[in-house]
Length: 259
Length: 308
Image 1 (cartoon, rainbow over the protein chains, first blue to last red):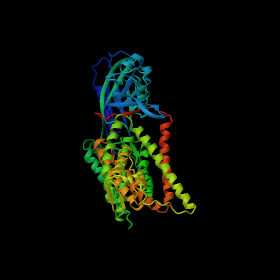
Image 2: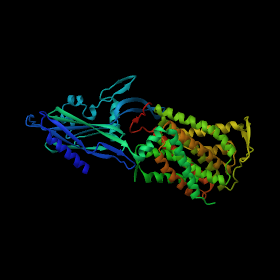
Image 3: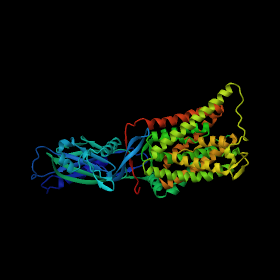
Image 4: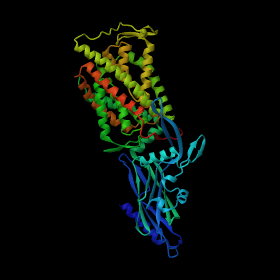
């Protein structure tokens, strides 16, 4: 909570000092820029505070403001496979490779995105899970496919079920006319890496400004040690695990020895 | 108590894993098998990816078979010469299995291969065990003496060249079938994440005519070496062995195995084989059910490692 207080104070300070801009300007602060995965990690909640900065010269917005927060996880190569029945059993047959697909994607807003702006605007700024670009590897070429592509739809659906992709139309709340807060939920299965946080400001369906920052998610301590040894020193790690197994077996046979 | 598994990349309940280790360990101690064919499906069921499950179970089996080998070693119920000969094939088989495992994973057919192998192997072996033990139980009911299986009753296997005398097992057989059996057990074990004890024991008794007294110890010795080898090879090539997962399972496993072994001594041999047969058969049916019924979700997403 103390960290949140500092973030908020820094934000209010920035809000108060800057007075030159004519158009709206976004000032954003995150509760933390580093998420650490340790052995007790079960997911985490981040809080984003933001302010819409304006001065006397800024035009009045009768329709009020809308905020979309987009959190994009590290790009990953994913393969989506479809099962079909071959000789009476269900086997993976067709597959598609998605290149640079976000490992995590959250679209947070203060009301449903289709009420915030028109479909073209949403597509241009890639707002809403439907409008994310998901380039696929198609017979050597790279390209996005129509929104109705079954593999693309399945990819989005499965990631939604894993809670890695989410669209929450009430995650952003205005607690004052120009001050807002967004709750960013990270499930336990989030990939490690750099996350980009884009805050996009709308009014009456028009994009007024953006702000971006980053979050780093990393394994620390024992988890980091195990994961990096497994990948960098595979053989040594295997020998150590095998040694551990033999030691466990030996201890058991000594402890439970009856003859 | 949730714990985050560093390689499987998901949090699981530590006590759940520990009790799974105890339960499977109990069964493995009772029947003198590794229990991999139960543990791997259980891990997949709680959400661990099949690849990580198979690779990590290898080290769990390695631990439980080592405590078994120590016990049989003290009773000198291990035929070292036979075990080493089986191992010659076993090591090559394990390496081939780990290679096939990586290949199938890269083309996306690993899960189906594991599933199909489980169905075929478990239903056939389970069915055979049920039939054999039922016959034995019926014979015992009718008061007839147990069927004689003399070591002298020769088959075509005994006509093969390169004969070797295995003193402790009191058999004189060709090295070829011994190496081939070792190869197959190592191969199947690495691909399916099982020790193969439930295959090796009948193979040695019925094909090689090895006396029952040394079969379990010898089989456990082979399981120990192939599974320890599989742990190292899986870790070196696929980087999928989760040490935290493996350690939790093996600690539970060795404890459960001690109690299982005591329970097993109170049940008659043929009844024990019938129980094991039913268990093996049921696990096979469960896999068949998944393959034949139309799944709710036809699509699956898998993360590709860099450079694959």
